Length: 221
Image 1 (cartoon, rainbow, N blue to C red):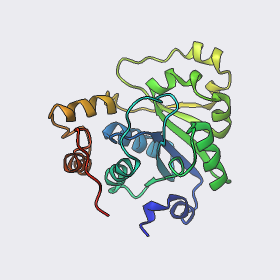
Image 2 (image 1 turned 90 degrees about the vertical axis):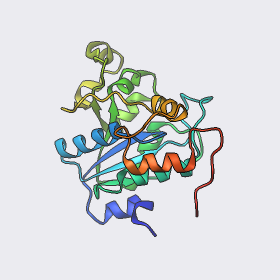
Image 3 (image 1 turned 30 degrees about the horizontal axis):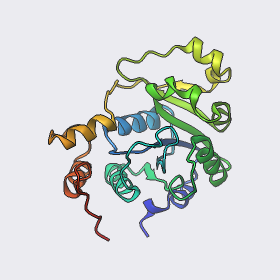
Image 4 (image 1 turned 120 degrees about the vertical axis):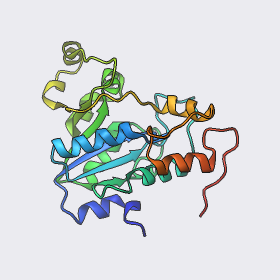
């Protein structure tokens, strides 16, 4: 079995003490995700960064989402060159609803002696107070934020809403990258290039399976 298919086993073999977690639909994964993960890995001395594709995000119940097998394949392609990056299916292999707090609780059980750090963009932090049980998330993990263009954190307002946040938050020194899956899907539908926006292997996968076109073929087994 491919070791990236069972990240918990692979990570346990290397004695993980600090584990980064990047969640999202990864539809498609792009360089913003990789920049976030690598800067967190280096700046916070993470042993491993897990990429955790979401099952069905509760805050996007009606939004179309690419089939899980395609998103998993794209993540595997995107992270293949970095041995510290691993894929986790923990969110895909459990029943809905797929809340971040529940996913982190499962990872805390898998890695009972490991410090969890949840990595996100600044735009996600701006909405963090509306997530399911933000205080519970902060009990399970430290938040690590990469600022994005056009976003400036209102730290005072966030601290009023979530008193524990200031002591459980780290902000990375990283380039502000304004990539989004929504815009990349739009570009693909219009025939615009994804080159230099996503890893080459992800671009090839998108083109091969016509993921964001009317007809989607099935991955080869």
